[in-house]
Image 1: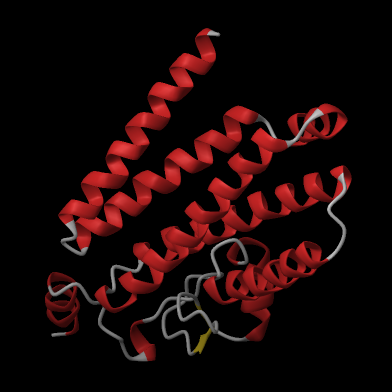
Image 2: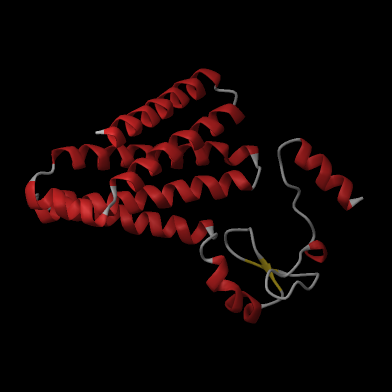
Length: 204
């Protein structure tokens, strides 16, 4: 009966919330895990198993990532109100790149849950990542001299452009799932332009 409920829920784009007797501990694999992480994606027998599994789970914990996003966003906002010298510009650009990566990871983890109700949140995180990637690209173009060399040393051009491309593809997937076909086509075309730009850049 429970298996059928899960199957029917998945078919409707949702994951059925199961009784604790069906949950498996992420650390020791025992059945009947009753303690769950605040992200609702990991279950444990108790606090000992949760603590032992944290080193692995922290990279997939959406609750932890939300807190990380809030923390980094506050730092970005504070840096924007402070000085705008070359060193500060490079540091801000690097932090925005890190924040974009966290937003992208959040979007991917949310989509993995296959819950239609969370697609809107995934789209928001992906758009935030795209906005930050574009900020980084714009900053790289305007940096000159030592600042540009410092930025190039800490943030490889190929890696930065790859992050932008991956974000566009992911946003296109979200649009497809939400039946926003025109929006999906637009971001896929932009991703294609990124590939073409990379080819031109590599040949010069």
